Length: 511
Image (cartoon, rainbow, N blue to C red; front, side, top):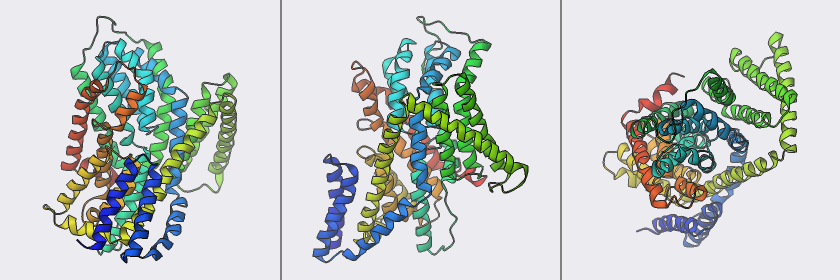
């Protein structure tokens, strides 16, 4: 084995040793490559001059307008979670769906789908579902294992249902790696891959997964339970349901719809989502006059989205449309200021801001550290070694794809999704993306794979999040038994996407 190959092996082993040692992931991902680079320099296999490129890489990350969407989507999710909107929605939904085991389980699934499309943060979603949904599910007669499994599975939906922070990060990496790989393969004008393409590609697989969850729940749980008679919702109940769900649903439609329609970039849509979440969080804390102003501000935001749609995504510069846009902007600004002050006065905005900074800091720290890892890996010739190893596999690109899927699945036991994206995609992605494989299809496969690894015993992160918030009598083996059917369903959807790429590529192609 050549000295250069030995240093590549040392880099990989040292990376995992550093992460598993308990060091912060950012320090391990950046520190180990730096030490290996220094050692490689003295061994004559690495040129330290390559490290001069690192500041430019960091500047490129921090000035990337696409990545600005990350803290905005995080803020949107944390606001909705801390405002306890999900708890109120579940209470109303359970009353309308009935008090049966099946009705309560479907209520949690529908709520989770809604929350997944507005948060996308697995840990916070799982803990929130435990707090607001576990006890009502058990009281409705749902056995403990299926209840635990459903909550863990529903908590991971935010990884695949757009808009998702995971898909934003995948879009950033897949787009860059695909363009570079195609240019090296001789295609100097490859089609650009956008986050909007990934959002569109994930819609059908995400809804298919929710459908299979719903069919499983419907088939395995009884319609009624002797301890809890079936409730019948009247007009008042349905009105309460509309009142509880409509604001959040409109927010999701505005954010996701503006991206898919091409009238807003992901960053602009994330800003709209953050403003909408701020208004929704403040609405329940305000008096009647304040609520009217918040509603007017929300209407102003929707008017701006509508005007942007009518103008084909172009800014308005004259005419009645410009005047209407200015009025809507003024009303929205007034509502945002009042809502923000309300959240400050009720001491809700401060913890939300702290949590947003923590999560965003973790994400960007890993992104910056992974950039150094990629630089050192390439400086040691790792890209060529990976290509050589992959070419030795049977089945060509399909063999390489299957190996990457297996590596991602196994890494999901020990690493967070963000770490996997910024380690695996730049290091292994060029082998696959340099050929004819659709980058959108590849990205959706990765997202579904990462979601499955969150749930798979014994190391799935969603299981640990559940245990941190669940009662002590729900032991670990019981949770494992509950998630197994949902893992099987996720693997089934993953196989369907792999066998039928149109599930991920049809909608982006018709956008």
